[in-house]
Length: 266
Ligand code: ZN
Ligand code: FE
Ligand code: FE
Ligand code: ZN
Image (cartoon, rainbow, N blue to C red; front, side):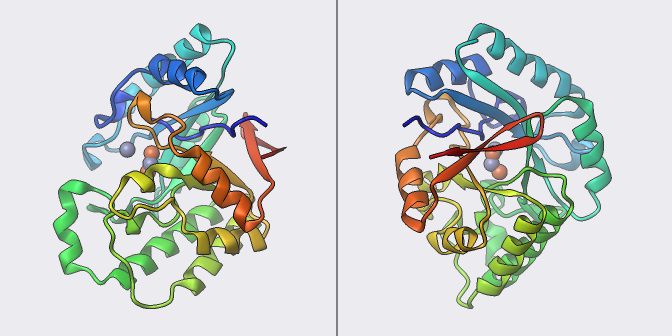
């Protein structure tokens, strides 16, 4: 039994991660991974949109860094991908990005519930004081549903990210989860088990067991990601994530090459 691929890792180009792709690859081999994928934060059409992502003119440099790691570590399968932000109105831009390089997969992530607020931004934590958690969850899951419906993504990243700092809605969110997962199934999007949540205040994998259980019932495929922003985070807590997946019934994960999915046993 081998570990599933770690399909979510970053590079310093996003301005809040450390270590070069070759360092992540070296670490992956150390811990016995056979496959990884880089999925750094994609650029926006406007570079001044935010300050925690690569610039538009750095996309080729990003691809070169990943290619260098592939060359240096031929014994490791290294996929080329992006973590792309979905916001309403951005679909054309995402299509342009998708056409620029032969990506193995695109992770669709929602961080922003408005153009100016990413719910996981530690520098904008005070924004939560002015927000109602259920309203944030509602907008968040509506956007996640729209992201799945674009058909532009192979994987949906960290599906319940708003819990990062420990905020929780008091109302039942099951209908929001249902709607999103139905869209994910319809548009053949895999759901990512992202272990970064275990390193945050919420102390829980994204998504919750409840969402994952629902995903299993709807037959939504899954992938695994550490969301490493430093080499020593590669593959972190994968045993917990595998355990969680198996405990709700999953026996398979998937691998992606040139945006084609293949199921493999867990
Ligand atoms: Zn990041
Ligand atoms: Fe993210
Ligand atoms: Fe990420
Ligand atoms: Zn992420």
